[in-house]
Length: 78
Image (cartoon, rainbow, N blue to C red; front, side, top):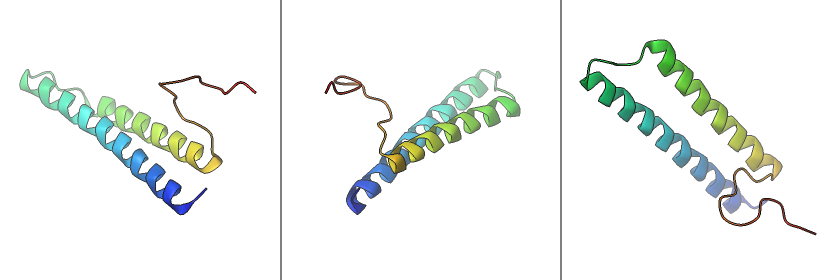
């Protein structure tokens, strides 16, 4: 794996984690507008799940395994 591929992978992971945290923050904000903010344990559980997703993506990047394939076949047929 080249350095450029590693850097692009880390940037991709940062973007995914940032989007997930932004979605969580928007959900907390919208719910707090209606006085239905989720408890602190739910927010902490969401951040733990985001951390586990990031950990999986880092392991997949270092091991060379694909994470999620949206377009195209999942496993190439040889």
